[in-house]
Length: 302
Length: 254
Ligand SMILES: Nc1ncnc2c1ncn2[C@@H]1O[C@H](COP(=O)(O)OP(=O)(O)O)[C@@H](O)[C@H]1O
Ligand SMILES: [Mg+2]
Image (cartoon, rainbow over all chains, first blue to last red):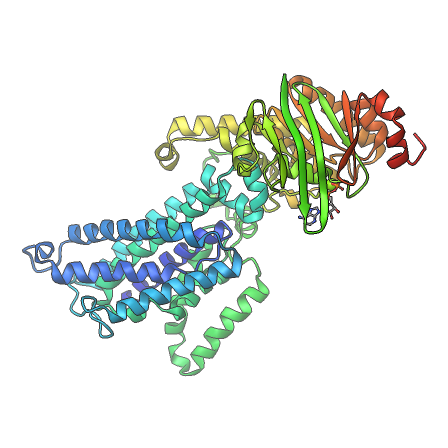
């Protein structure tokens, strides 16, 4: 497998996590590609228009990429805070439709703005890494950090509150959980992850345009979570890796690949309604682990 | 001291007057029962108190404070917990996690300590788990701690709802038909348990239950609702002899 595909898979896993965060709270938000596009646009604009960021060496400084990530996180975070307050009052499919509308509005605005390059987009985004391997290592670290954050979230109070809201929002509120704020937290975290991922993607792809955050992308990223599962963060990571790789791996079968890809997305959830990765399956796997995998002892109770 | 005061409460669902001019005052430390036939408005009264259903007229006071119109999570944080007539557990969570969610307002920890899994965080988390396990043990559910709530028997689900409600350390506990679906032996056990809990946790209880002998044996005072109106109020002895109650609810056969 070539390194470029691996980077794309890692980016897919990050986007899967972005869709997963609100979904774990029972909120079907399809806004991820919108925030992804904002992150990418921020990176494309800053790195091509701000000479100070370019540094003196031949490669674009990683510090500048990190700065872009911070700025993209700030922008998407504030935007998610404001938009989330409005749209999170909607439930289920109505929330999904409202977030699709948000993504479309963003896309059309980007298309028609002069400084974002309109329909053509922005080209020649400078490269912080000379090879795909460099991008791979950087993205892998980012993915590990986000996975770690999700893991801590799941095992602590806000994560328990999110799961409670997913199971029964009214009962959760009756336990003293501020459901509006908890849902907003999930939505903002989701936007941050998508925005930061957009920054990396913009550099990796070398060019950026409005098409990258469209309705198709909403559905594809949702498929990552539907196929992988939304009970633990491992689900969307697995779904994102697999579904990003699949179209490339299927290239040898020619035009048939789109049909096979569609069939996987359709049949997967039919056979595994909870997604491929569930806590029960993970526990079963753990019980049947080979003896050499036995850890010294389990520190926690779970 | 009066903990909860309901004055002239009216709730309307379209053409249906579910509650009409209901007055109640619950004293600290008492077990207060609500009797009444199906559709009398008992659950609606609970929903108004816990902030799930808005009232059309009247007021609800918690101690001195008007609480009508507050959102339900705020009311819960004041110290009012409840169970639901048609069970609303977090079915995909374990019994332990259900109780931990009930502890939400007391389980706050600094986010950074939680993220970095500091020893101080882990100690507090262990302590919370220990408390949750003790609560489960009170209801005989300690063996099911890691089981998903959805896998429990009906009676155990009712008990888990009570454990979850107690986890918030409430002053007032609203129980909506906690004995529904239990057999006579379980009902008797539940009566003794509620008595014991009120003493152990210095609880005030407002309880809805159809099983009249259980209610007469358990409650300090009772109110009877019929078609949204309060038709009787008093000690079990007074209520049992009240002609309006015999007429409306006990069907002339006390
Ligand atoms: N959300 C609602 N919308 C419309 N009607 C309702 C609603 N909740 C309760 N009711 C009606 O109000 C009446 C009282 O219901 P409820 O309080 O559940 O009675 P109880 O708990 O005493 O059996 C019933 O006729 C019921 O159908
Ligand atoms: Mg009822």
